[in-house]
Image (cartoon, helix red, strand yellow):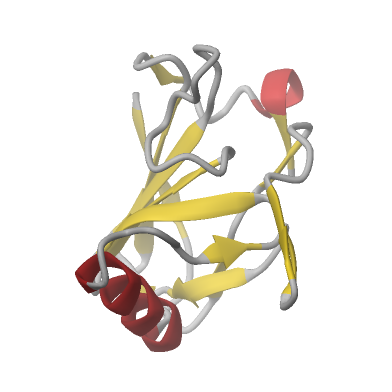
Length: 128
């Protein structure tokens, strides 16, 4: 399911908190998500440290955000890491701003083991 969330132009778009634990700790901080895809207007972040939605044990969650302006610094870091062979990908923290709304609707889709999930059902896996 794809959900369009009404917002105001200029509003920061944040990475949603999940009950999933820390996925990586680097010298620069602790991260709860990994950016596995990004363009100027969309981003996919997974709740694993793997370069895919599902980890080696068959578990994982991903959030797809679209129709907003992805943070240019985060996008540049993703593009550099992608060009360098994807050995490292950017990490994001809970409630970290990943961009700003440049329209009045931002689209959100959630996946787990490849299935799209209902993003309105926050009590089952994420907290606002």
